[in-house]
Length: 472
Image 1 (cartoon, helix red, strand yellow):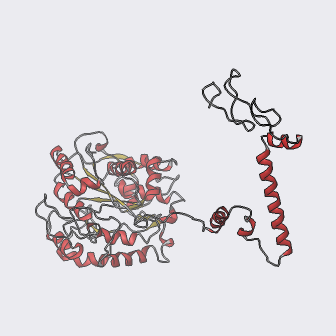
Image 2 (cartoon, rainbow, N blue to C red):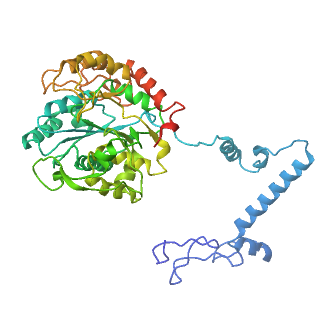
Image 3 (spheres, rainbow, N blue to C red):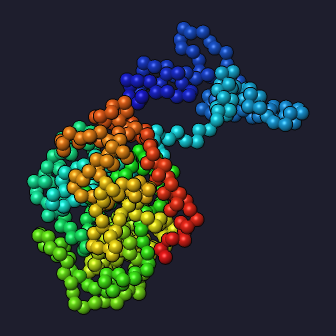
């Protein structure tokens, strides 16, 4: 408190602070006479009076006591046959309870880190599911077949789809109790124009990656699918197997041998009207051709990829100029989705050792190959299962093979129309077979699909051929 006449100021040499005006208080001094009427106190020697009056008296006494205790401990150590000084003997000068406390703290094990939260080893996947005009219902069906509350999803119906379909898609997501509570499904409301043989498909994929980086929280792999794709195993199967993989493996089917694509894809120049028109048109061909680049090597492969978050950040944020340079180069490239990510990855030395030469899909091509793959039917189901791939394409709308996959591979209950669409059961559903709420999203119940996917990973990631198939 301040010495303002209304309080007492503490001083090592006084019991009461003097009155600011000299009245109402008495100042204690060892050599002073007692006040009138009091008994005389014995007079202390000058040295003792100095020690009591000094503000360092307490510190000096404690220092002397500590010095004597240390000296005594060292003497005991030198005269004893023991090879160490125990904490109890070293701190024996302290009170019993204080000495026990110090010894207990010295013997207490050091805590390195807190235990990881439940499900820390289970990865998170981020999906883009894209469609066009007339794809609303089958995109909605694919979402429910692929859904897991641990994952993130971006849904996109391109600008060719009517506005009413995009609004209906957004309404279905907001009206679904599970999707609304999990908050992990993002609908692109401002649709992009996509020409599937031009660079607008690459731009749309990068747009979804940017949305997921900004709003999707923590995820480990990005996988792009279309509404005509369908899973061949549950998300519990996929998450279970992916939890055993290094988090830096990129699944990109690729080859550096262009073959016929050199003359029909690499050298021709095209213009994609989707870059500047609001109505969908096919690409335009330019009569003049160009030579192959010498600043980088071209690679080609499948348009369907499974990319790590590290590589997605490299492509989107672009601290190196390579992703931007190649994005501009592929703006005039035929079927640029089949070459952009392959060429970026294989020309970045940091990512070359991470690529697995597979697109995670089962796709059947006609002979000779056409622009689009063979449409899968019920007769192709055994081939799909034997491929061990987690996804397949291309499926017609509402084909009976989808019902067979639901029943035989996914264990998914029949749906009651589009509004009563059912989820694929998993550990996250708990004891509720209808999956009306999220229990624990890290609980997995892998089934036979996990064994098939594990076999595929053993052949492409854990095999000796893994390094020999990278960017060749």
